[in-house]
Image 1: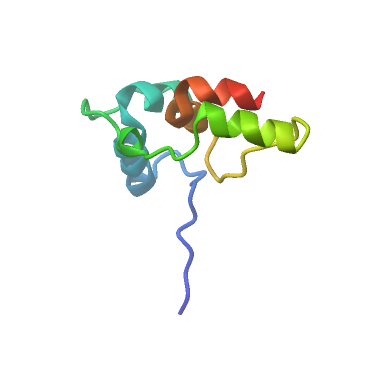
Image 2: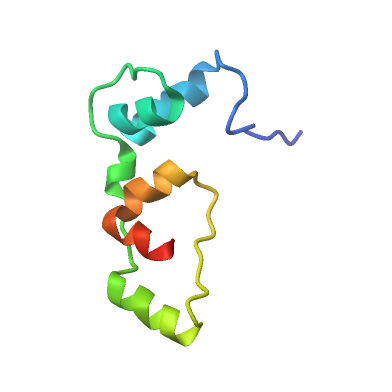
Length: 92
């Protein structure tokens, strides 16, 4: 039998997904996204993201593709901004 994880869950009482989100996003970003306090105080796993793009590469791509570049991801806006930090503004 094949089952799906069903993430993100629409069930507000889903303990597994809620715990994952708290650990992944960390307390500050979790609170910003879900408007709830995290039960954890450690930094989120999202802080371990390795960003391979930099501002120079983005500028090069913009020149080559006439400013028509984008981000394709399954993550939400707040998660992307958290990972990309200051270079996220180069995509706007």
